[in-house]
Image (cartoon, rainbow, N blue to C red; front, top):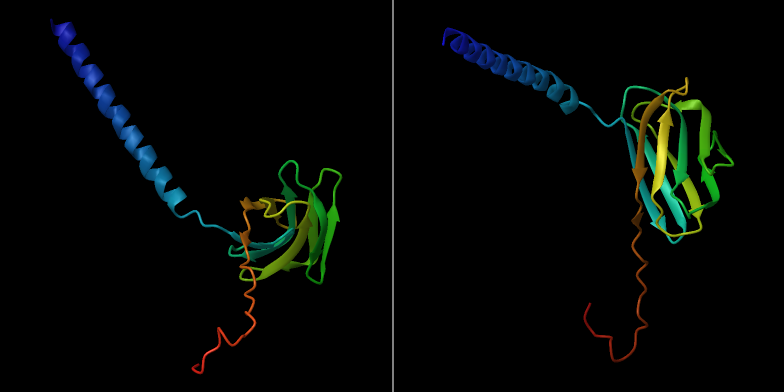
Length: 162
């Protein structure tokens, strides 16, 4: 009987020890992830087959290069970037944009691409001067609103008012 009582106390102690370790682990991991900040903000707008992506450096590291690529069955037709940046398309369909001048924290760069399909999701990577990954993501472009065309003014739809 004494042996059974000792075993019962032992297993209860083990359960409490396991719960304490679990709580400690959660208390350490959650604050680390809660303060993880986005370091690169990517916004894109699309009109027909043309997409403009704006990368803004919201982090603390300088960005030296961006790599962009598309999903399957979509291809780049052409691309254009800001002055001082060079773009090179690889055989795998990745476009690598580099510059001797970095995108410093608070600065941004715009890249224009033309694809063979409308509104493509564009995958991207931002790298530092040592080719170390800063952040990776995907941007889905928002379509620009269609232009508003004015109706021709006729006697029927015109008024004497404003």
